[in-house]
Image (tube, rainbow, N blue to C red; front, side, top):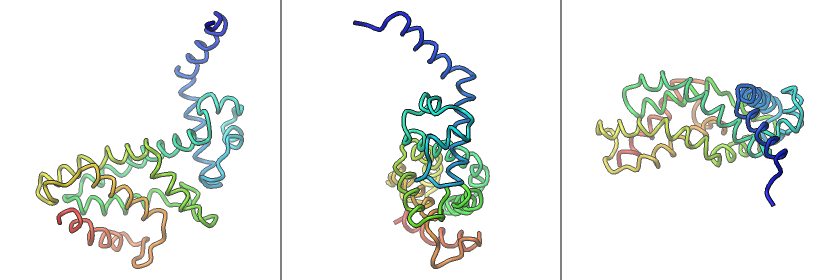
Length: 212
């Protein structure tokens, strides 16, 4: 037996709300509130109740847009990744070589995305490791970074900086994972607060690994 007419109308109205301008604004508000909660308490302590309270909406409204906590976390990380890509792109693309681009991205990411400020890391033991694992397992975040690095790797290959048979997606993923590591794990052999040391550290390894 199919859904009754009234049920179909209710579902239609719900879809209109979620997909319309008001729905987009509400979703954006929930994501902004979620990001604030992540900064305050960390990814592991993000809860639907706290997000609803911060956004000024009901818990039911949060679930209308995000069916579970995992979906919300993924959406928050995706939004942060998109904003970060947009912020670093001009400075990265101005660099002449792939090694310089990867190094510049490391510097810019560290400056724009301090772990404590954006991901709530460093507040509790294991939080940075937990966040890193979530980040690299989030398909939409990975796709966003792959889409950014893929053309830069291809251009470097065409310029002869890296070997001609390199797997572009694998190289782009390695770059993304390296940046996640730099953000989430403290440096031991260089000063992560010194942009020139970061650049030297990254450029010492990127060309050789991609050219051999």
